Image (cartoon, rainbow, N blue to C red):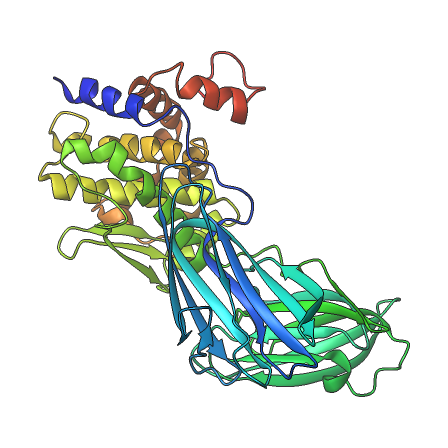
Length: 446
């Protein structure tokens, strides 16, 4: 059996559509506030709930808890007081951690959650008075941001969590309904610590009838943090819209999301060819602050390095980033297979086209837009004219220009067509096109 025929059989067997995830599903989830315990006259109970939207992959989840001072926070969710809780959530399954209200005083902190496949999550806060639940609020997880904006009154509830390993100082400002800043203050949060307060506790000069907005920024511009706010007005408590800045994104978190989504689908596509890429045998991912646009795979230490500068270049397009990361993983497949190529004849001249084809199949299966490949190469081609911006050793190639030439960008439509040639057209590419690109001309491959 030829490699092409074998791959067609493998792909036909694994389903007809890419893996798409709901809005908010992520491999990193941050909960800026937890509250548990207290006297019987006023207690808080926290529940963390997760859903695994993948129809095929089990999610392995780790929940790490930190207290106000940044030390591990032991909370009892039914298995004893622990600061690390692990969950295994089957495909399309769900899991809940609900605190047992073990402390006679209210303890607060934050939760940082990681998963090997994207999951959805929510936190529920239940207020209990003399054993009777009187209120329950929910809030979604968030991602790091460098600015947080919220509707505000004088009694606005604010929670800020420091996700770094050093103490950070933040500024909080209040602006009235006309946009005029009326008060500004600062506060500090220990490394991995948490701070919660009412707005008037930091901005003590706010008038009793203040109504407007509150803005939180780090003292050092660009430092990421997570936050959450709660409307408190005349003893009525309600949730508020998320206030994290939409863009720029948290690039380290997005790189991890793209990386794990691609690895999650790789075994079904490549394991039969002897290239064992999976979440369980993942190459080491290095997210580097190196000041050069680059991503590359190392055969010596089985590492994929993604520079933050690369993610920043492709900016707000995870599909563009996905193709570049998948291309690097394709080289790992080549290394592990002991061959220069995987799908094409074993010829050094085909090494890069072979990696492009593998990457395109991985991108399609992982639910990213394959047309993002041309966008990624186009941005690299644009940036290549700027001295020292793009690494001359991009993708570990001796000739950096071939990695992102205009000709290579123009070849991407053919790569998409070739990728669809390895699958059942009516079972995969056709429904993909109908769903994702319904207004494309009939001649388009996807």
